[in-house]
Length: 211
Image 1: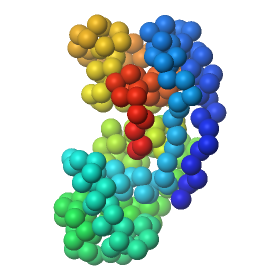
Image 2: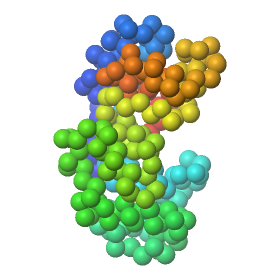
Image 3: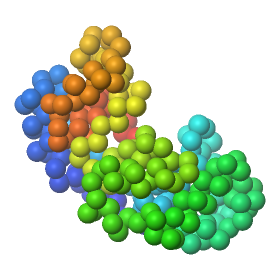
Image 4: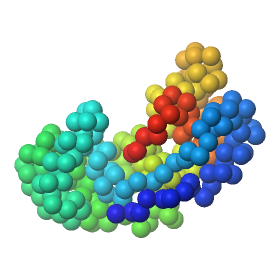
């Protein structure tokens, strides 16, 4: 298990200072949440497996299913999950399709097709490309992983409805914004779009999500 970070990502303070300087509305949001920052939680396999388990069900239901899955596994590792029968995984409360997805993820970790050791040398798009080859992982899930697990500094998940709503409220007086509008606004935030996104999410919900 990856140890929890005790402080912000190394780029956080510089990014906040720069974003506040180039974008006063965002600067006001940043100043509203002092002492808060993005934290990475969990190791890559567990994080991705939990994201699959939690798809299209409530947080409470996802936690219950995950606990049953953990009990069935003993210790949740790629090697262990890859050896499990689909019926055993499904009996923990996963749909058969999700069981197939989790098993596919485990097999790819075991084979090295998905290899966290390579990721420090890869750019964001290369990691996304690697992850979306796994059944059940789309681009949005991969982008959430880059933000919340890998702490990549310049991820902009333009398909995220919450982010689009936050941009609408902060920059368009609540009028809808298109993805093209959002991308145009985000240009000024590079190379710190993860930080801007995180604070825009906070403007909707002060409680940080734990991905």
